[in-house]
Each structure stands twice: as C-alpha cells, then as structure tokens.
Image 1: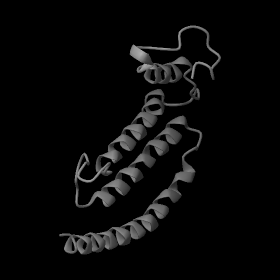
Image 2 (image 1 turned 90 degrees about the horizontal axis):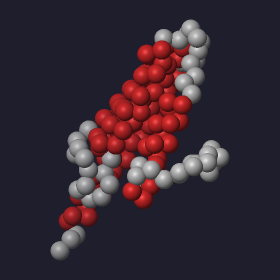
Image 3 (image 1 turned 180 degrees about the vertical axis):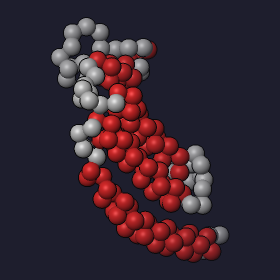
Length: 139
C-alpha cells in the first residue's frame, strides 16, 4: 500500500510487517475526514463502523470446515440474511445524517434478499437429503 500511495519512509510496521494493514487502515480513516458541512458528525462517522461490525458478525454462522463453525445454529441461513439486511441501516443512517438524500436507493435491497432466501432454503433442504443418503451407505 505504501507503493500505491507513493509514500517515502518505512513501509513495515511490527514484526515482519504483520501490523501494516492495521496501520494503513487507521491512517486512511483518520488522515482526511471528509464530511458535508451540514452533516451530523457522530452519526455520519459511526454508520460505516456499524455496517462493518455487522458484516463481521455475519461470519459467525459460515462453516470453514466440517464441524468448524463459530456458532452452529439451526437457522443459520435466516440469521445470515437478517444480519445482512441490518447492514443496510448503516447506509441509510449515513445518507440521512449527511442531509443530502443519499440513502434512497437502498430500499430495493429487501426485495432481493427475500428472493435469495427462498432459493437458499430450498438448497439447504436438498442438502439435508443428500447428507442423509450419504450416511446410509457408509460402512
């Protein structure tokens, strides 16, 4: 990232540069705060943080390997869609707090999530049949 930003000086933070992405992210966020003059500063700054935190929470139900999941819920797909639809509110709050009307196009997101949920539930139902059939033929 130091090369892309044409910076001179050290481009490695921490041991072997492991902390460099965190330092670059903090510098990018804190370096030049651009916000409209009529904006509610607190809400305008906290809306992206809330959206980012919700996107991290959504990873709790995604399995990484067989039996390796942070939270094994029976309604994991429903949880995933619920959390992903809550992330939209951060964008709405950012648009509302800027007082420029930027959050109007987000209303279409719910319709697309409902259509995806139906397909995902059907797919999950078929996967349960496949797993039952596979367990019968194992020795």
